[in-house]
Length: 118
Image 1 (cartoon, rainbow, N blue to C red):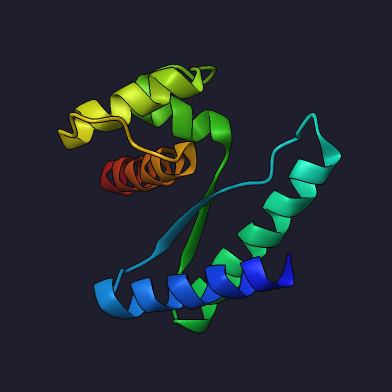
Image 2 (cartoon, rainbow, N blue to C red):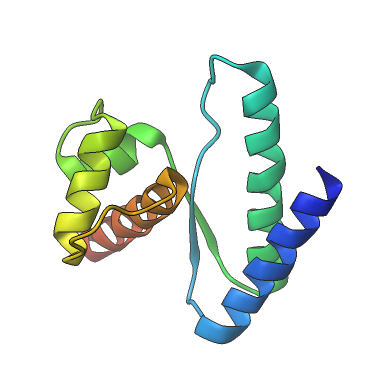
């Protein structure tokens, strides 16, 4: 686990340096059925937030329901529905893999839509 978290930090830092984002949008912690999975996701989420903060990026957090509602119009949409709408909104024809990549894009779309409403 420590090596995986280090790799996540290294690759995120490289991506931030290469793409120079203006902010970071992340999904809030949710209640998972599997405690081990929730703990692992919490570690990874912490690395993401730390990387953003160290790069001077503001961090915006959204609940899973907010993200799903922004992308699909339904707060209880399935992963498949979210993935479909992310692809449709971004004009991507092939499936986005892994699912985490689609979830990250959904969080970014949610942030974009919520910020443009303000």
